[in-house]
Length: 100
Image 1 (cartoon, one colour):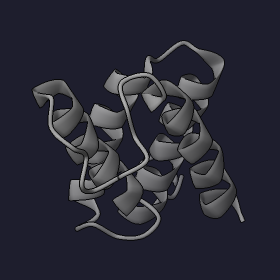
Image 2 (cartoon, helix red, strand yellow):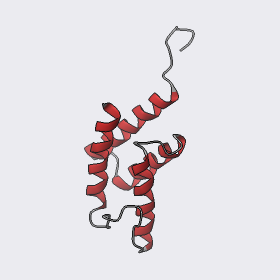
Image 3 (cartoon, helix red, strand yellow):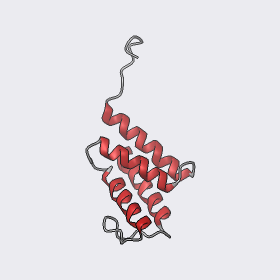
């Protein structure tokens, strides 16, 4: 890209763009909620737990708790039954926050 004199996006912008792409895929159904949470959690770690990525850390922890049959302390409203809906709601909010 440098040879073509095209500037590369900074890493923060690239992570946000990738996060929006993943959240969009969750909403359109091409990425499942659980897989999407796991992938967005990895981005959260790469940003050193920066807002607005922290919700994916909370949802990842909640998913682990739900799968273990425990109470999801990090996202108390999450259950096995509503997890997908919560992830989609948070994906919409994430896109709005990052895009504004």
